[in-house]
Length: 304
Image (tube, rainbow, N blue to C red; front, side, top):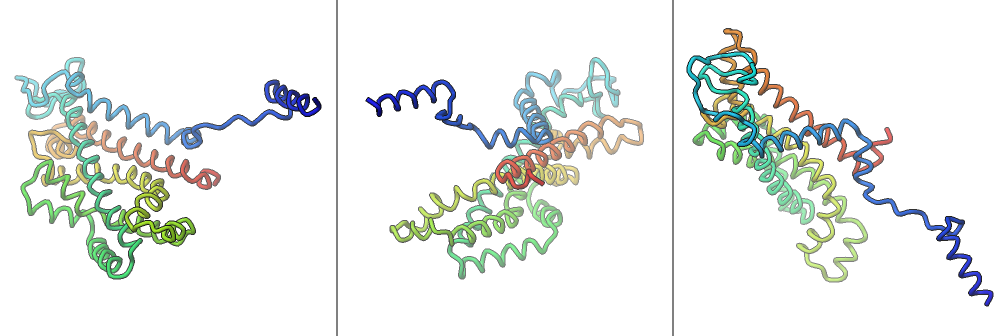
């Protein structure tokens, strides 16, 4: 009877908020830490707006991006043409929206290639070591010794310029930094006790890499991918500006800058301002979001 009474008292304490009440379980700690960084949240919101506009481009562009309007050359922003028109009488708002779709998609696809190559080679180098590590690291040393923009220009000039070429060139030439980062993570993690235990239980190398090492390195990889998205978009814009990327009449923010620069002396400032501002906001937003993710995954950074 005494034990039953004590049990009932304990239950009442839990229900009524007494000493026996269990602390509430905190849910989504990563999201909570990320939300504390207001700049990172603003960056995420901006990115969502940009990608939303790119997806909804056919609905919001108002005019066809390549449609010509007689007598509308180099017209400033107005109620009819929100961001003005270019020297070929095309609507700048339509080209900016469609160009955003091209630039954002190119950045995303290029980063997918960078991450695939970099993670694969970095994981193999860090886990296996020896000749594999030496081969991968010497290759990265050679590529890192060449300025990236020079390497991109050389590679892009060897092939027919276009969106596919731009994505491939950025992806294939930009993986060394990711490979080094993943290699360092795997070198540190493979010496941990849980990896030793997995080996003792007979786990194969691919299983250890995929089930034990990769999940523990995932936070660093996500942050790296986020920051590299901004680099890839900037690199695509640079190649397109130089005429080695996306080719006119297909719009991208980079070739819009190139095309608009010719009209600056005529006073058509809007042709370079708006695509330049779009590139700036996108790169800044991805960097802010990357900083926020870094702090969220490692709370020690948020306590500076």
